[in-house]
Image 1 (tube, rainbow, N blue to C red):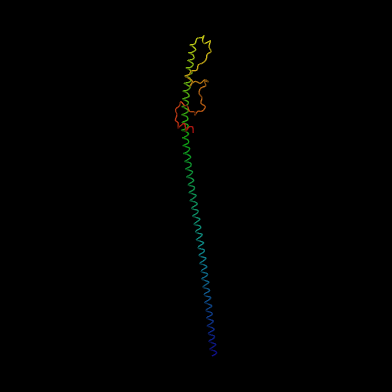
Image 2: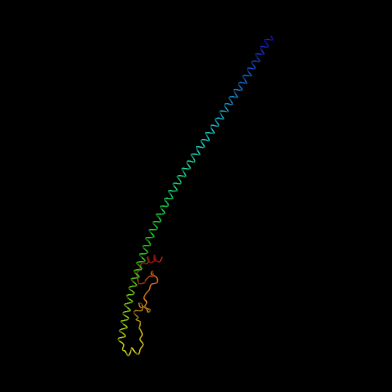
Length: 200
């Protein structure tokens, strides 16, 4: 009996040991599985982080490339705009210079025409004054011839001014001089608009 009991106890002990051993093995196996799972999760996280970093780096590169392209396009546009503005300014300057040259030529021609007309009027006035002087000299000679020598001796000879020629004769006999070449002669007919432009 004792042997049987001992054998049963041994068997029970062995079974208990086996059970404990199996339990310990299961616990180890579960721990190993957990470790493997944790390692796999950690690897996945690392891989995900690396993938995200790569994506961010690629996005940054793409953004930088896009910015560079934009800046290049903007610089090209600015250069084109500057060239166009320079061309337009040069064209405007050339047009203004041409217009000013035309206006100056027109003004100079108008001034020359006015000066020529004034010179013609001056010449006519001089001719009229010379004619009147000749007439006055002829009248004086006729008066002197008509007077007798006795009358001529007794009286002091004075020149008589002709009333008809008061507007044309100059007592100083210096003639008509123009200080200002652009002064308007009232005898001359002129265009009022052109004279206004000239005065401006």
